[in-house]
Image (cartoon, rainbow over the protein chains, first blue to last red):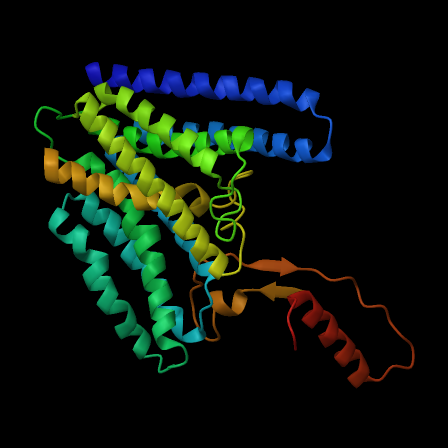
Length: 313
Length: 57
């Protein structure tokens, strides 16, 4: 089984990276001198610990194949939407649309992907949910902030359900000469998006001087973006054996993934701040909430899916 | 005791909660003050709950 060997190779690489990160974190925590350093190192160690758990959860989900992966992302969407709606002001009249979003639209979107109905899942939320949610809301006869309430719910469902569901949808792409290897594509996407986030964080902490967007996301720096983004792109290029792409195609794809991931993080940070919060939640220790971890995936996954589908499938 | 977000998760009269993050905040027990009328106790209790909600009355 050629495919499984590549997956196992990736897994060994990721575990090695986590071992190194845990080791470095343990050494650093014995050497801190100031409270400021202490806070940074504690956060680093909490993040590494959370990454161990996230990797274990991902491996278990992947081991259960398509159903496992779809279930995992459905739950991720569920928690992300929950964080989004918790921070979004809603009124009693939004009850039915909210219930529909969580318990009908979300499962339906993932079921459509699972039954391989590309023609419906790609338009289900942008067309059907877009028209259905305000229609249902109108029956509550509450016109106070009606447009902005509908818009916010539609945004939450688009980002948390529609966009995130494109990651497991990669499993169902039919790429000539790449049959049976589709699990690698989702691993490739997650690896580059998350490596880019992690490397931007590391470069930012080590070399960061110039703030990139202090009002939107105070921790992002120009040095972090360039160092982390470029090295994640380079790693993405080097990972081309995982993909149906050539080296240069893979380099271009990972550049797009990194760029979309970056603007996704920035945009959702602005959304989060406009809702008056610093983190989306407290689900993942050291990281914040589910959406703090998936913000970049939600922007990168649909574009990666459609580019791959357009040019390769 | 204040139930944060519950009015959004389960508006009055519905059967099933919307899965939002809700929070229960416990305040300190109210000390009994002798010779306080019913109205005053209720007003004091209400004030404490409003404080827990972090909002204005």
